[in-house]
Length: 215
Image (cartoon, rainbow, N blue to C red):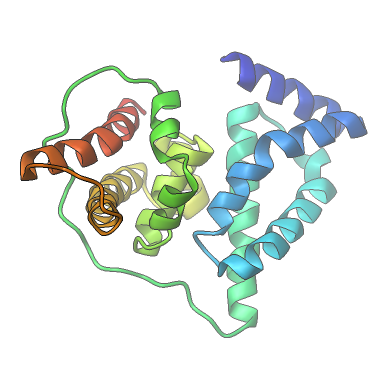
C-alpha cells in the first residue's frame, strides 16, 4: 500500500471511531477529486451542492463502511454518483449520452506512473475539456485517472463490466487528445508540423493510457 493510501486508510478508520480531526483529513484528501467527478455529471453551478449532499451521506453512513483507501474512494464515488443522478431526476434533466469513438491506438510504450497521468490531466483547462466528452467516457476517465480507481472498482461505481470501463476510458482519452489539439490551435500554440501536433496530444494522453492498461 502506498504512503498516501496508508494514511487515508488510517484516517478513515479513526473517523469511523468518531475522530473529527481524522474526518477532516479524509475530507481534504478526497473532496477535490470527488468534486471533479461530480462536475462530469451535473452542471458546474450545482456541483458543490451535490457534493455536499454526498458528504452528508458519507458522514451519516461511515460507521457501516469497511475497507481500505481504495474501497473508500469507490464507496464515496458511488454515493456521489447516486446523489448526482437524483439531483438530475428531480430537475427533469438527463445526463448527456454520446456515441462511440475510435479505439485508442498507437500509444508509445513506457512505464510512466499514475502520478504522471494525474499531472497530464490535472489542469483546470483539461478537466473542463473532460466535461465535453460523452458522459460514460468522461466518468470512466475521471474515475480511473483522477479519482484513482482501478477498473474493477470503477466498474462497481458505474454498474458496468471492468472491460467496458477500460474501453470507455481509452475512447475518452483518444477524444480528449483531439479536444486538446483543438484548444492548442485556437489559443495560438505554435506546432510547426502535423506530426508534432499529433505527438504532443499523444504525450498528454499516452501516460494515462499506459496507467489504465496496467490496472
